[in-house]
Image 1 (cartoon, rainbow, N blue to C red):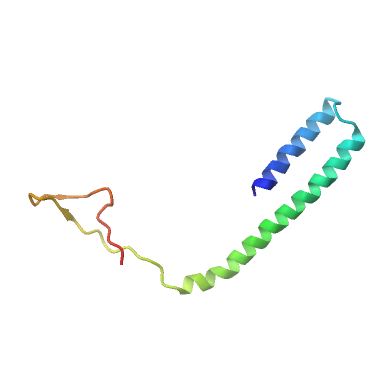
Image 2: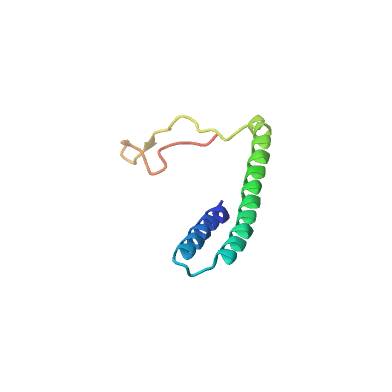
Length: 92
């Protein structure tokens, strides 16, 4: 994902360089083609990873997940209830 965004930045800079005439058309075209290929493979990799994660989700959903029980009130030494930073939750 970050590679894709970095390549978008590179495309912007190449376009700007061409507009300012600090790069010639042949060099621009060559760099755009090379970066476009890298972006294509980066996006294909992201899609492949997402498909693999989606396929693995049903198997992970079959496993029991950690659940939170109802909040348990905490008691101060003088008997006054209070909720600490943990919110009084107990893991089961």
